[in-house]
Image (cartoon, rainbow, N blue to C red):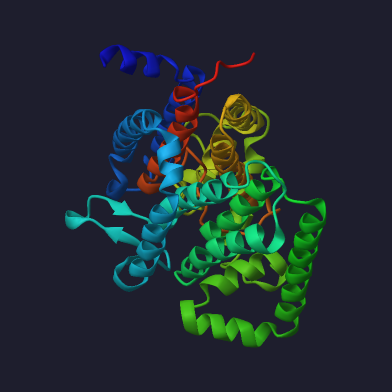
Length: 387
């Protein structure tokens, strides 16, 4: 038994583990820089970040030693539990930053966000469904339509919180997994056409009925959504206070230049111009203090992580494992692009964190478990790897 455990442990892709260790160092440095001048209420966040990473690595190795095929087999039951948790959090959850999406554990020491967990459960569910086709082209009404319904339920529940960022990730996961799951080109073209038509129609509808929609949104969430939408679509029409975060984010990123202003020397971050610099806005800390070179180095590490994960998908001997990895890769790539893009003005402002870098318990834990399941496809590979 011990010999089998050691053999499985030896199959882990240690290059991925090494990259995550680098992320831990980068994240802790940036979290400390972001909070060290923010006041005593943030004291110790860098130590908590290390503790969260320690728990994350424990979860990573534990999930790596769990047979991913078992999780895919029981994915429908896990999916039901995930949807139920999203429904319950609307009634019994705690509200942070305008979204009722967290369960607070007794004592308030840790918050659980079901929307984060649902991303993994949705990936498992889609992988379960796609595996039934065994690589054959997907059928529109028997395969694609049910998958759309599987995504629709959590999408609606998360939008009701409201949490636009995680809701969009569900759609991205579905799109990425459908593409690799042998969707027909005609069906893909139909889907893209419908999506573009819907977005164009919503844009025209919003601009035509702007005042009425803004008033409706203000009644629901005190204008939180209206400000974010207008900041992206109509930046010239919003007040200086409303566009404060985006304007100062761009200035901070630009002030970093090529090499940055130096560690702990970011003027905009440390003078309070950037909200939540330890969480959603942590990329701004990196860009201002380490400049273009530091930002490029982080993107290189992300590229290496994604590359190794895709290599695991190629080497996987089961389609279910490959689908699982593609779903996880789609999630990570979109989160990276969205988080960085929203501060550059090319993406709308959402609450999506920067994977493995932003401070956050639920997101980090789920991300580490996801990578652990990627490693599980290597640990439980039955056929020899082809190099």
